[in-house]
Structures are given as structure tokens and as C-alpha cells.
Image 1 (spheres, helix red, strand yellow):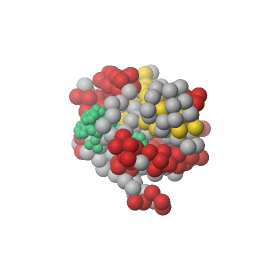
Image 2 (image 1 turned 120 degrees about the vertical axis):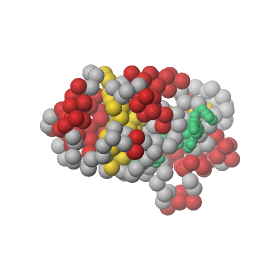
Image 3 (image 1 turned 180 degrees about the horizontal axis):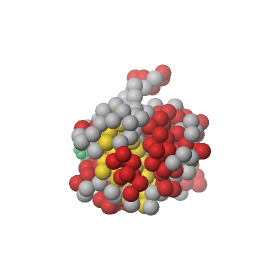
Image 4 (image 1 turned 90 degrees about the vertical axis):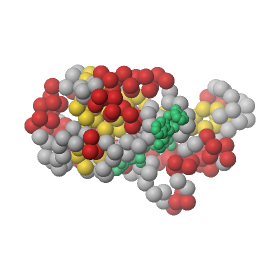
Length: 255
Ligand code: BJW
């Protein structure tokens, strides 16, 4: 690691680098939505769900074993996501898109909060939990009973349109993410444990191609010691401060 700063101590070299950046890539994970009240993926589950590990629910095997259980878990998360509001971190990233000459936001999240905060140049690597697909056949979505997770066309189970462990990521999304990581000059990793591949490879691709890698995360990750700049703290607090210092005060970014 070349440098480590506290949350409010942004060095002049970083401010200059962001001012001059031509292509900025931002990768986010569950931590960016934590301040909107959504549990991160590896947070301990609470209540009814405390006996299940998310890693064990997000697989085809788990779904085949107990489709009702997995559908119920996603139904609760869908309802939570719909009730949640984008936070200052989401909004700062949407503002960054407007300032950078070229920009791409690559999210591992399936909650839809980035799009709701105004991000447009957005790739959803792991799908979106607000969409469903027929698990048995390629049936059309106008015959889905979303309440009970049934396809009314073939009678089969519905599953959320997300990427589970062991499944391939959508080729176009992954292709766009890889290309952007190869071409960017600044790469942000925000609110992700950087443990799930291929997303966890993107910062390595960017770094090998000479990009400046900046991490903003509450806890240290495998990326932390390798990042050019690492800020340990909440994205919803650090990002608006950084945005104001780099691109000037903006009404939207005020707390
Ligand atoms: C804050 C904060 C605040 C809190 N502010 N920060 C290479 C090596 C080893 C294994 C593999 C490999 N390549 C592929 C694999 C297998 C596997 C994998 O990666 N396994 C690892 C666990 C080792 N990958 C796959 O299977 C992928 N498919 C694939 O590669 O296909 C080809 C292939 C198949 C088979 C074999 C080999 C190749 C698919 C991965 C799909 C991941 N899907 C999930 C579920 C999506 C649907 C859902 O949400 O339910 O995606 S799993 C889960 O993890 C979810 C997340 O998007 C993803 C990443 O988690 P994330 O976002 O980082 O969350 P957390 O909770 O881990 O971290 C949150 C962080 O935020 C923490 O660090 C906090 O500190 C921080 N935080 N509050 C800032 N306020």
C-alpha cells in the first residue's frame, strides 16, 4: 500500500488525480447500501433468517432443495429494497458520473438503488432482484405470479434474475466491466469485501494497466494493502466529502 489516510484527510495528489481523470470506473458492493438500511451480504442475518447463511441461499442447489424458502428470502429483500431510499453515497456516485469525462459504475448489488439515485452509466454484474425469470422454461414474464413465485404459463417455479454462486455472469455486463477496468485511469472500489469473483478481479486488471486504485470501505479487505489510497469508513460519509473537495460544493452533496 502506498498511502493510508483518515476519512477527512484527502491528499493533494488524490484531488489532482481526480481532477485530471479521463476515465473513472466505480465498483460497488453491499456496503454502499448499508446506510440505506439494507444488510450487507456477509452481515449476520437477523430474526427468522438468523439460522441461514446468505452464501448458502444464493445457489441453484439451495433453490432446487427448497424453492419456497429461497423465493421467500428474495421477496423479503425485494420489499426491503423498495422501502429503502438511496443514501448520500449513492447520490455522490451519481454526481461523479456527471463530472467525469468518461465514467462507468459497475455494481454487484441487485437492489436497484443506484438506478434510483440517478446513475445511468450502470452495469449490474449480478442481476436485479426486482426481475424474475422462469426456472423451468424460457417463459414470457407477462404470466408470472410474483406473490407465490409461480410461472402461470408452465406451472414451474420462478427465480430472481440474479447471479448465484457457480453461475456465469451476463456476458455483456462482464465484457463491459472488463473493458472499462482495462481502460480506466482511476478505479474506485466501494463497500465491497472484494472476495467474490470475477468482480474481485476488476481492481487487479485496472491496477495492472496503471490505473490509480482507491478503496472506500468500512473494514479492511484483501485490496486494502494494495490500494493506492485506502479510506476506512462509511461510504455515505467519505464520498460526499471527497466530491466536495474535488468538484466543489454542490447543494445535493450537503448533509
Ligand atoms: C461498508 C459500509 C459502509 C459495510 N460504507 N463499506 C476465483 C477464485 C476463487 C473462486 C472463484 C473464482 N472465480 C469464480 C469463483 C467462484 C465464485 C466465487 O467468487 N467464490 C468466492 C466466494 C471464493 N464465483 C462465482 O461462482 C461467480 N460465477 C462465476 O465465476 O462463473 C464462472 C465459474 C463458475 C464456477 C466455477 C468457476 C467459475 C458468480 C458469483 C455470483 C455472486 N452472487 C452473489 C449473490 C447475488 C444475488 C443476491 O444478492 O442474493 O452476489 S453472492 C454475494 O457476494 C452477492 C454480492 O454481490 C457478492 C459480493 O458481496 P459484497 O457486495 O462484497 O458484500 P459483502 O457483504 O461481502 O461486503 C460488504 C462490505 O461492505 C464489507 O467489507 C463491509 O465492511 C463494507 N461496508 N457497511 C462502506 N457504510
